[in-house]
Image 1: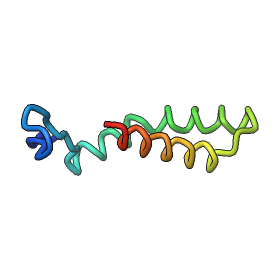
Image 2: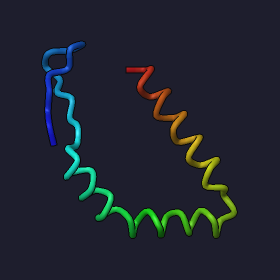
Image 3: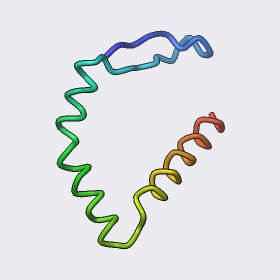
Image 4: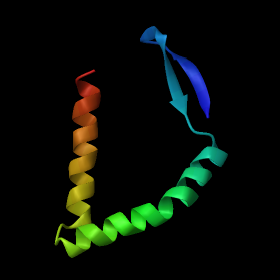
Length: 65
């Protein structure tokens, strides 16, 4: 993990994962991701629609800050 000062607000820190951190998160989160995706499929919720909606929500949240 790396933290840098947010250029828009000096008291904030922007945190990013290193390559090793991304790999660890992916490895640790894979079983949860697989189970979550299976639950969406079982509930007849298309994963692609869920993903698109989630990305759009994230964009809207970023715009509002």
